Image 1 (cartoon, rainbow, N blue to C red):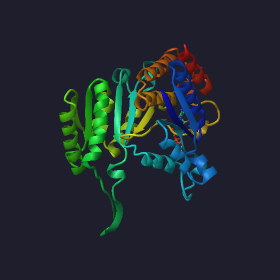
Image 2: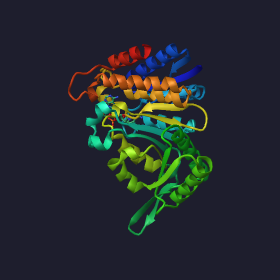
Image 3: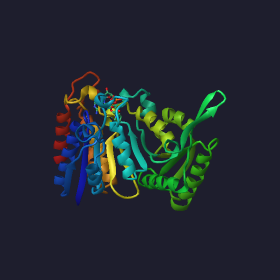
Image 4: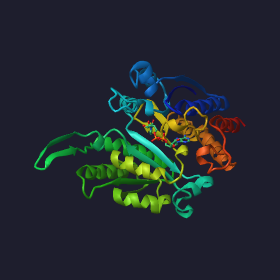
Length: 357
Ligand code: NAD
């Protein structure tokens, strides 16, 4: 396969972890006989410094022309001035919008070797393997908002809007993913209170009944889901939900494995490139010190191979190597619990050398 892949290292530890992601892509290409043409482009704070814009047009053009995008992270104290004209995060929001990335995928998997780092008991959390689909470009974060006069001073409002098409497309993607996993889909809403959720539920049920009769389907209210996630996380396979509920539930779920440095995510549209990134930020406190854990980025590479390039064996090979590396006891400082640790580049070396073998 020939594929163009855009790398957006970003700020803080971004360049360090994306460098390791790049090495993994190069190794996969070599071992499996592919050709990946990779190019790096600015986004975030460094792009503000150099171009006065957190997302220069040349970066957008390169992304549009690619098969997939690997992002590090953006932001840092240097660009935190609240009076600044623009912020690094604006680049991230804009690239998602420009590419129509309406579905955010977040796998939540526990690693047996690290399960004791979870704030939950081993018997509850071990074996958890959930794939979240959060709708990313609709709902209350994008509805009309404003303020109006009120007897007590002011009232503020945010409108939650979902259309049939917006629900259909994300539920369809989630159901397709469920078919390739354990065959179970959970849709989360608040249909006992919200009209937008009642439409969500109606459309989701129709899509699943008509197009995916083979999958097991259930509906859970968002407040109940918040409880189930910490009392019986192993019961879920694929979970699909709207923007705000997904925002909150995926952050809650990201605590289950006990380590931020191991969680990747993907943002996908109906066609065009997908965007892959670790869920953590730019970690300015450890930037430039060769301390960052590159594994979330390397697992984002595995997602990129699977979802944008359809290279399932290659994705599985990367995931197996990460698992074997952890099993062998190698840890970066964030997951070493005070024990011996390896650097960012050493962790990259370990993954690359096993992938070559
Ligand atoms: P953060 O995720 O960057 O860091 C939180 C803590 O986790 C820090 O102690 C950090 O050192 C540690 N950490 C994070 N990733 C790590 C890794 N790979 N290896 C080892 N340790 C790691 O969150 P924050 O400190 O709240 O935010 C820092 C900056 O990142 C802010 O400017 C924020 O806006 C930005 N941010 C960006 C994204 C993104 O680009 N998608 C996401 C979240 C935060």
